Image 1 (cartoon, one colour):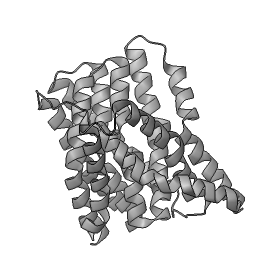
Image 2 (image 1 turned 45 degrees about the vertical axis):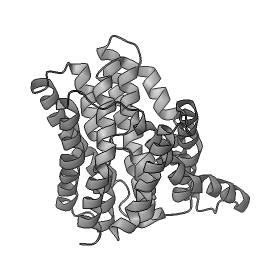
Image 3 (image 1 turned 90 degrees about the vertical axis):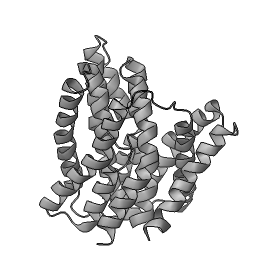
Image 4 (image 1 turned 60 degrees about the vertical axis):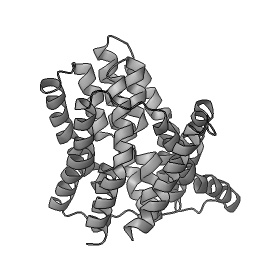
Length: 303
């Protein structure tokens, strides 16, 4: 069953990779595809999953536990980056983000939908809110102030105006009203939502194809081990200890086993900190995540 769920997902990643390597999907075209997915398709899927009334029992618990695990792991990542790899404090921010910030949108959404349908997406949306409203703004603030730039207010505005943030808020508000989404609007949003999984995975595969291989493996390998091994083990342990339902444990652990999101690399480039290793960690972790996700799904979903 693990193969049945995950094989189409990684086949789409491979399709995007091949399309980029053969020149069929250029860098410019892929950039447009990523914007289309991030601004329309995934927000539509998040809104529809929440507004349609997909109930996630224990609202908020999965997000708090996930945030607790991230907070504990980022301390370890900072210490390792600073004392073992000799990174600057700003570089440690990028390294730490690569360890705790999962690709919850481009890869997580298709997997959550394949595993638990709308319930899985509704649960994942709580973790996406943590990524969007806490992790990225905090990292941006630290990098901005650490580099002497005045980017704090811009980071906050960017987080609030992010289409996924708006979709999350709108979906939650609409669900509270108890009203059904009007059929023409629901069909329109549904068509966008249906395109999200395939397009996001193809775009991500094409992105990975353009990342150069590492010449020094110390930082990328450390980042990948912390992200794909330690992170899911830590989240699973905390979720088990707190007695979360099986569905929440599955989504939280699978999310932790995902590779880092591309936003980590974008931040690294924007502030000129640890950018090359961030790109290589992203590519290496994305490739190896087929193993980590398969193990997590097999171990947790059908125990």
